[in-house]
Length: 234
Image (cartoon, rainbow, N blue to C red; front, side):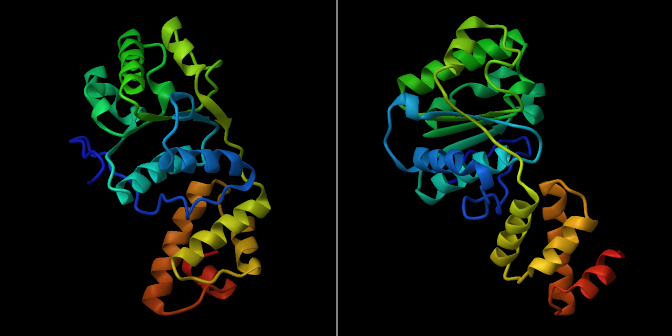
């Protein structure tokens, strides 16, 4: 079965897989999210909350979990609340029919009473039906501006992981991993050249790798520093 297809332009990225995620200091979080996808577990192990700043891989892990469920033939729903909050909390109705629900950008609904009440009731329905819930936000449950005490209480039941930014060495390895998954070889020298000249965020680095991949295919050239300078006008 396919994950839920919402009429809102919400789609999973094909490259958002566990194999494409370089964990760095986030290996424990990755391990627990993968376990959530594979094992029958109690509710306390079926409720995970990921938080951290931009570019640490929150959305990647949520989408990777949905793609893993698709591979297993299970139904999964991915909702980036920052993109769908405008449609109102009724969008949460009946999500308990899915084996896994991934709610991204939980902070986008925090402080809105109707949304908080709908989230609280969704949590209860998912728990009662033995479903799994994966949450992501830019702040920890304690720091999230949730006003509804019952919802705040539900969030304390989650396994909470703070995702850490990658070090420069980890960013190099993440780039090399993503390049290898595309069939490209990236030497340490080329990778470090990108890190010294390009933008620092992982999203920007992966977008740059996409450009290089396309250019490499078109020109049938390997990733070298002269090729980078020519392609990126550095």
